[in-house]
Structures are given as C-alpha cells and as structure tokens.
Image (cartoon, rainbow, N blue to C red; front, side):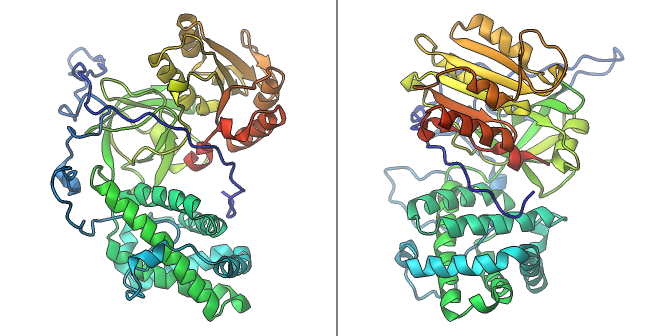
Length: 488
C-alpha cells in the first residue's frame, strides 16, 4: 500500500430516501441447515437466536447493554448535555481536547486561514519523504508516554502508520473546504468508535503528533506552523468527537455477527452469510469493516453482497489476497459458528431508486458483490421503464463465480442485462473479451445513465476515465474504491 493516497475521484452523494418511521412486519428469522455427515451429529444451531429479524434501526430497536450506549432521547423530553462517551481514536489526527481550553467550542468551527493551510501543506511536503520514520516516531512517543493506549492498536503497526500519514495528507488537502472536511472527519469519527478509545486519550495523542511533526519538518517548522497545526488539529478532532457522540446515541460502536454459512466459490473466493446480534441498518452499495477473532484490532472493509433482507442476514464476498491476514482467515479458516465483529455501514455508492434512472454497473472480481446488491434493491423498487446494464469482468471464466446467479436474475427481470467480460484466456459462453473499462467503452452511448463501479482500484480509475471521455458527467459516476481498503 502506498504511503501517498492518490488524488481521490469524487463521486457525488445521492439523495437517499428517508427510512420508514416504523419497521414493517416481517417473518421470523430463518437459518441455513447444516446436514449431518455422520447421521448422528446435530444440525448447526445458531448462537444468536434472539437477534431481530430485520435490518432495522429506529424508534423501536434495542441494543445490548454491553455497549453502554444511551438510548435515543424522546422528542418531548428536554435534551440534557451528552456525557463524554467512549469514542474512537482516529488513525489520523486526533483531538487535543483539554489543551487551549480557554477557547470556546465555537472557535473550533471557524475555518482555517489561507496562511494556516499554506503552512500545514509546506510542512507536510517536508515530512512526506520520511513519512514512515515520522509516523513511527509518533507512535513510539505515544506508547512510551501512554502505554495504556497500546492495547487499542493492532500488534503489527505497518499498515497503521501508512493510514495515519495518508489521512494527514487528505485532511491537509481538504482543510480549506470546511464542508468537505466536516463530512470526511465526521465519517471517520463515527467509523472509528469501534476501537473503544476514551475521549480523554485525544489530548496526549495530539501532543505526540505535534512533537513528531516538529522533529521531521525541519526548517519548515516554527511557532506559526505549530499554531496552524494545533488549530487544524482542534478543528478536526472536535468534528470527530461530536459526530461520534451523536452516533453513540442511536448506534453501538460495533455489532457481533455469527457466521451461519460459508461457501467456497473458487480456490480463493468465499461467500459468507453472517447474522448480526441486533438490527444492522445499511443500504445496497455500502460496505462495512470486519474484524476476525484470529487477528484482533485488524479491520478490513467488505461490501454487502445483498440488499437488506427480511431475515436480517448479511452476505459478503471475500477474496484471499497474498499476505492478507483478514481475507485469508475469512476464506480459509472461518466456519459456521465463528463470531466476527462488524463496524457500521459506510459508503456513498448508493442509488436513489425513486428517480428511476437507468443504471450502468461495472463489477470486477469480488467487486460484483455491491453490484448484485444494487440489482436486488432495484428489483424491490420495481423496474418498469428503467434499464440496468451490468458488465461483470474477470481474467478467466472460472473467476466469474456469480455469473449464473446474475443470469438467473436477468431471466426474471426483463430490464436487466448482464454481459460477462474476460481479459485473459479461456472460453466462456457469451463472454466479451478485453479489459473491462475498454469493453464498456465499445458500447453506449451512456448519456442519461448513472454509473456504478466496483472492483480493483486500477479498474475503477480506468473505468471512470473511459466514462468521462464518453461524455458521462462526473456527478453521475459513483464508486468507493473499496477494493483498496478491503485488501488484506
């Protein structure tokens, strides 16, 4: 993984219809049966027998007291100040809460000045070539001075160091855009509640970070630069803490999910069916982070492979990658009965089906998972008058593990077209040949459609370039580049 995050492609955020006010009536949960191989062993019995039968979060849901999250405050009751709940220690800049306490909370909302942004970027330009040493020094300071925070981090810190500096770069690039910065940091604050770090840890983290930057910024560091960093640090951390505390009012920091089905589709690809221990809200096209019991505190992102289901089950497609701790554990070791931890749903690759816009979907490898979910969701909202084109790419025919299921859907849904694409050798009935983005470019025009791309980052970037050159506006192209974050 590169230490410098490429310039992100910026898909627009769709308008998502609001959730219903009350959960609909649904049948009781169902579980896959595991046949006995000996004739005497009992069938698999799920651990979470009392989990809700719907992916629902609203006024009627319930949460385990293990998370100690406060229930939503009724609208008719005067709202009391929210106590400092456990929130996440971010992988990037954290809060310097407690430092400069004389400044009001409103001051943290003020955008940074142009001079602040200039000083921050200038110092980062010096630190970037030695990013690995700078971030390692930061963690050394933190763990030596505050050993109580070490158990909150994974044993191997190489990926953690890389994520830290990439997040710093992203925050520095977006510091002059308060709206974009707030959206990004709010999501980071909510998503990292799963680490369980107390708000009181933010101040020492901030001091150690400033000291590490001061050491490696050289001549670019001075009083003005330090003040600029402290302002940015306070702004970012305040956004994160507020978002995390607001999220804690209605959602746990993580869910427990029991594996109830494990299917090997290819040598390196498995489809996991997971039952959360309580209601899990999400939308087709989103993803969540998973932690396995074999690699504590190591989280990886995976997209949902189905739309929300009445029985509450979640489906994930996982490909084991070389040296991938989590992916190899999920593919080669996980089995029914194992319990995973799930972070909250995230991602903007959702579609407003109320508009009925025609869709163009590109899915490469296990990137077909969110595409499959979006097709299911489109079917639930009705398809008359709309068209959905799915291009499903892989190198070899055997890797098109979801093709039969997609063709089955196309046989029942007249508005759905599925086109397999092979970039390598090997026959596949009805398959197109070539790289997926270039094959899509041979069809069209795609004007008037919304495009959704999911798969390897290189494929997504090439696909976006092809669609832009064909005249599809950038605001109609959606992706999350989840594959880059999910690897490992």
